[in-house]
Image 1 (tube, rainbow, N blue to C red):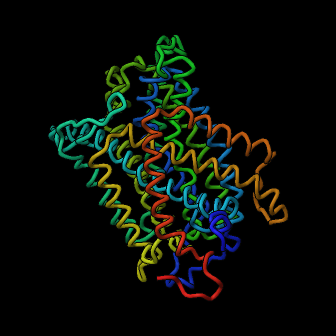
Image 2 (image 1 turned 30 degrees about the vertical axis):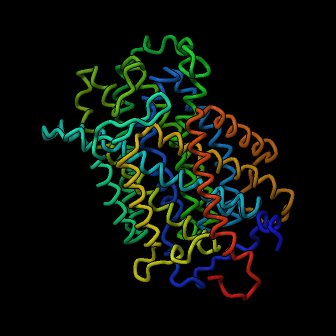
Image 3 (image 1 turned 180 degrees about the vertical axis):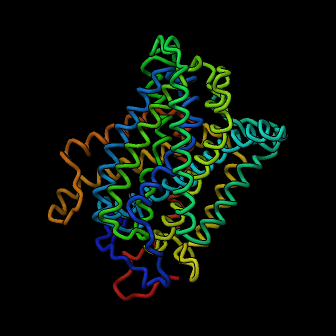
Length: 488
C-alpha cells in the first residue's frame, strides 16, 4: 500500500466487533438515558462560569446573541451527527465518521483533537467546580480553603503563561478522581447517577431563572451591544469572540455518540438524544444569560462564580445562594462524569483500529468498561485541572471541538455522493445547505481564536502526528492484509 493511499484509506466496515476483542460493552441506555448524557455533558461550566466571562470581557448583554450564534453552529453539526449515528452506530463518534469519509490521517487528526474536546474540557470544568465548592464551604461551614490549594499554579495573562505562586487545584483533582472511580465500575452506575444529577440541576436552573426574572432591571441591558473597545471587546467583534468562547458550552451533545455501543437501539436513540439535548440546553442557556445580565451590570460578572455574583446584589435572592452552589456543583460534576465516560471509548475504538496499542482496547471482564483507558483519562484530566487555568483550557477545547464538527459536516455531504444508497433512519434536511453552513460556521468561529491558542494547537497537532507515524501508521488494521497477524 502506497503512503498516500494509506493516509487516505477509508474504513468501510463498522461491524460491532466486541466479540473479537473479548468482553463487550453492556447495552443499557435508552433514548432518555442518552438525552440525559447529552444534557449532563452540556449544562455545566458554560452556564455557571463561561457566561459571566463572555459577557464581561467580550459581548456584554449581547452574550445572548453569542449563545444563539453558537447554537446555530452546533445545530448544523447536531443534525450531521444524528445522521452519522444511524449509519455508523459504534462508539468512535467523529473519529469513526471521519474514517468512513475522509481517510485515515484525517480520522487520526480528529481523534487526537477529541482528546482536547473530552479530556481537556473535563479539566476546565473541574477548575470551575473548585470556585463553587470553595464558595459552598465558606457559606455553609465557614471554612476558607487556602488559595495555594484552590488555584492553578499557572495563569494566562496577555497571551503568556505566568506563575501564580499556588501549589495546585486540590478540589478539582479530588472530584475528577472520585468520578473516575465511578466510571471504572460501570456504565449503568455512572449513567444512573448522571440522570439523577441532570434532573436536579435542570430543576435548580429553572428555579433560578423564574425567581431571578422578577428582579431583572432592564436598564442593565442598555446598550444591548456595548460600543466596541477593540481587541474583541464589545461591539460585533466582541459578540463573535463571545460566540467562539461560549461554544465551549455546547460541546457535550455529541458525547452521546460515544455511548453508541451501550445503546439498546442506537439508530433510534442517538438522533433523539443528540437533538433533544441540544434544544433543551440552548433554552436554558438563554434564560440564564438573560437573568444574569439583567440582575447586575455585565462588567462585574467575570468571577469564578458569576451566578452567585449576580444574585449577591439582591438581598431578596439570598435564599437562592445555596441552591446555586449545590446546582453548580451537581451540574459541573455531571459534565466531568460524561467526559470521563466519553474519552476512554474513543481510545478503545482507535486501539481496535490499530491506531493505539492493544492495551487501550481492553474491556474489564466484570465491569464491562474500558477500565485502563478510564484510569489513564482520569489521571490525565486530574493533572491538567491541577495545573492550568480555565480560560486557556476552554479555548483549546473549543478549537478541538470545532475541528471535529467541521469534519463531521463535510463527511455527511461526502457520503451523500459516495454512498447515496446507504440506509439512513435519519437524514439531514437540505443536506447541501445545512452541511455547507455547518462547515463555514465552524471555520468562522475558529477564525476568532487568538494566535497563542493557534500556536498551542499547532504543537498539539505535531505531537499527534509524531504518534501516528511512530505507531498508528505501521499498525493500522487497514494496512494489514486480511488474516495477517498484528505487527509487533
